[in-house]
Length: 114
Length: 114
Image (tube, rainbow over all chains, first blue to last red):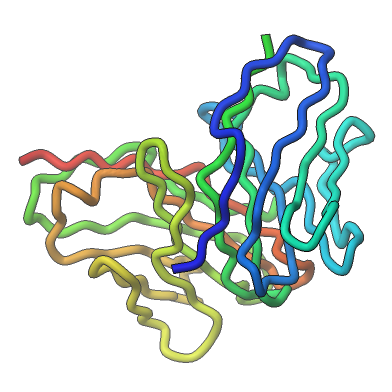
């Protein structure tokens, strides 16, 4: 069964450093997403991406964050100048259509900011 | 505020017992409804979804869920729980107003006793 893959599975970074989390969505999917889950809290939507641009972003997704699809297969989340409160599990996801369709999630990337 | 509520943070059942996990949402229109499961160290796996039509939906691993419009609920059930069902279960809602923006409940941790 096709799956969304994410790397790294776990990353520890110093506060203030830049982090790039990488994802390979399911190959025929057109919509891509990032979600995050701070320990003990709900899974939260960060951003959706379609046709090489952001479709929607949450209030969490400020100028510190950016997303990119650098080639035909990868989808990245960059966090500039990480803060302690950025420590979370970040999930990449994809779907073949937009509204109301099944969203497939990756296994997540644990980010620990120290 | 519009939200998704899973009233039970932690549920413990014996193997072979029946299970019901509750989910309520507070949106004006009927949204798209999902249940995801997250096993330790794993990503979010879709169990089932409701878009329209028959209000009783069947999912993977023997799970089913029933949509009740009058109660704004989408409860997940399984007639006989297996030890491998121990995981965290998330109810999620897509309001259909944006692309792939799921709102998650806070999750219910299921413990299964032998």
